[in-house]
Amino acid sequence: MSTIPDPGVSPDGFRIGMLINDTRYRAYTFQFIALVLLLFGIGYLISNLLANLERAGLNISWAFLGEPAGYDINQRPIEYTSQSTHARASIVGAINTLIVAFLACVSATVLGVIAGVLRLSNNWLVARMMSIYVEAFRNVPVLIWILIIFLAMSNALPQPRAFRGDNATSEMWLDMVAFTNRGVYIPAFENGSGSLVFWLTILASIIGVFAYRRYARNLLYSTGQMLPTGWPSLAILIAPGLIMYFVMGQPVGLERPELKGFNFQGGVHLRLSLIALWFALAIYTGAFIAENVRAGIQAISKGQTEAAAALGLRPGRIMNLVILPQALRVIIPPLISQYLNITKNSSLAIAVGYMDITGTLGGITLNQTGRAIEAILLLMLFYLTVSLTISVVMNIYNNSVKLKER
Image (cartoon, rainbow, N blue to C red; front, side):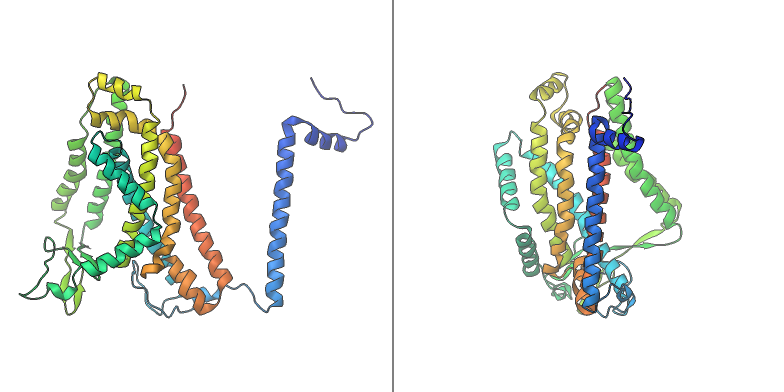
């Protein structure tokens, strides 16, 4: 039934009344009004801030980013000196933050899944040990664990001089890795001619493993035919890279750390601050992920397990093919929050001297330049961007694994 305008009401008045009274448009009208009011409020606050800064003789300027930083950074993933700019110091700090966040997310996920599954084990001892781990680590602040791990490693690991001479009291592991109280020294890759082809082959092998496992799973779901996934995945991962390594004339070598003077030279130096922060974030957050995994598994009806067992599937296959795929729809949403917590908790790095973006841009740069507003705004923008990126990626994955009705 069409709506006929009142002859005594103008067309404009009729349209306004329709936007307010018609239930089809009223919700959008109030949302639009709320958005306009919010934008006006934000604009007023910004203009008030700028006016107060102008009266105080201050102004917003980003010129400080081009000035020499004048301080050193101990963990440098890219080239950096004390004469580099504050902008480059901030980039170094941002990369350090992303490195520890990535390592902690991967480690916490693996640890959390294992602990969550084992906590439901029929073995009483294993289940109780996992319960103790979860309750012990998630009920103590992560800062305490960072300090405990850092101090324990600093006092327990030997000094580099313990590896020197015939009277050495410590030895390198496999003659390639040295664990010291200054950090862990591991071999570094030396790329030669043809190394790009080799690394592209490795990348293609990793993609091939995921593609094969996906094919095997789809084949099982569609036809019931079960393909082995263990040794074929290992062969796909190792064989192409190994063949290409010899075909290209061994383009990649290893630079082993060597004791020279009072410290090790060469290789990659993983400082204790990085390791302590990485392990603490992984173990702490892994306890929360374990509870998410346990809740997701228990959300699946026990009849699913019994039906799969009746078909002759082994317990490991039941967990990988039946339980976990269904539990992901319960596990992933809170898992996103845990990844965000890891990224934000990495700002505690300054407690052990790890120079992340909070220590560089939000710490030394801010104190040296006095540009508190600009530094804090950039710091907020960085964490906001990283958090939104994690949310978008994980939500896309969540939509791909959620149950779809026919």
